[in-house]
Amino acid sequence: QVQLVESGGGLVQPGGSLRLSCAASGIMTGRATMAWYRQVALKERELVALSTNGGGTNYADSVRGRFTISRDDAQSRVFLDMRNLKPEDTANYYCNVDYWLNGRLQRYWGQGTQVTVSS
Image (tube, rainbow, N blue to C red; front, side, top):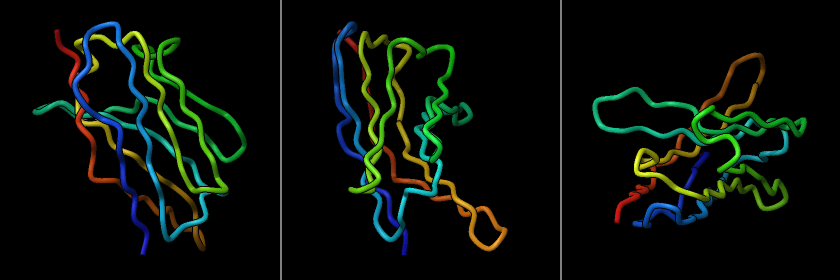
């Protein structure tokens, strides 16, 4: 059974930093694309950053240059380092893992961790 557990969210002042972590169990992440999404109430979930198993990364325009995604496949973890946080970064952040198994896309989500940027 695949399980993703996020941690590291919280309340931070504008301009501050946070590090989100996601621990995956039941899956070897070395072949997976791992990503962070975020969602604000009544809005669609949006991609924040992703990391492919080939070492590629991609970021939403709104966070590029401020957020960094990294991964440790030996520990089955993915991280999101966020700096220079802005009030508009306030959201519930979700860890995502995608991988192909027998020709089918397997997609898994964590339960989310809340990030609030406010003075």
